[in-house]
Length: 517
Image: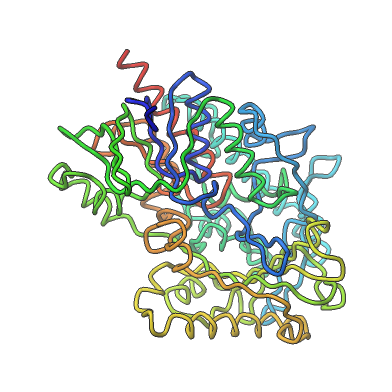
């Protein structure tokens, strides 16, 4: 009996969240789908690991676009529609920002009051009186842009319809987050900094981050809050894999794709490392265009010059450097009182923080996550699960060698632990039971992501989500029957976004199949 079928409708390279989302959607429309995953587990970086008998989260695992069960947002709806069953836990607060030099220490919460105003606006107004009205107006604007992007994710509109139905999106699409906030408000600089804290989760400074991306993030997090899976992000990955198989998707683990077969500029199959040649009508690629065009397409003569130019012209977004700690005391005993904290010992300046991310270590802006406050049952009693993270540019590790890699990552991890220890007034090094350090090299080694990038390509004013939405569904991949199914597609900043990328990839394939038929 043959291990593989003679032919599939679609082969998905990679069983990460985007790949499984693509496969689920295609299978729900009756298509035959094969997922080839290089590892023995699904999910990509949405996974966990065990140290000293304790499961530890391996990723910044908050999910956006979930919302409460009685008021679900679009991602919860999509997953439930696909039969993905996950036990979601609401994160207690939106975030805390601590900026010592700015004398900022504030905790914000998602959601609205009964009169429709924002809870976060009240919390900011308590420390900065007179700002409530303008903060409410800004968050209202973000929510409207968020709703427009969600709508356009499913619908195509003419320019006239866009102007009439999505005025806020159209008016702000050509401006950076900094420009819109500066031009539409008269808020104190401290409040602008408070409202900029999430910048690290999109990997772009406020002066070059498109307002559309900023508004989508703020509108989502502040309206619906964020969620984690009770069984870690690994639960989510396994639930998606289970839903895939129930729909008839064939998932094969330990099967790394080395080549994408192309003839007359049309993809028609793949070759695996073990030597299998498998054919399909379409290939949905988890690997980025850089890798696909650079070495995976066979023969390389099938790669158009324009494709290489495209890959080389797209600047990679951020990677991840994370220190995951298990500590020997309860959070309260270590002066840890919040789930999510953004902190800096310097004045808040996202442009400067961005520049720091091009270099190794001594990063001023850190985010810490204390899992105890979102999922207390996942942490042993009397212990603390804490991660300390910065999202530097992948290029910062370009000149690290095998000889100095371990020393380099330990030095940076030590700097990060010391910085958080100073903020807490507690030497965390005295309380470490277990520690793991994740770097861009870790990401690249585990997932094969080009240079360890986790967010695809940078969202800049010249390459915004609006432009990518305009191109979605068009044959701009330069090799037909090949679609992108990863962070390198519409957007890359987060797990929910990648699940949506997979859905979009499936929609592109289904549309082309329908037109061809």
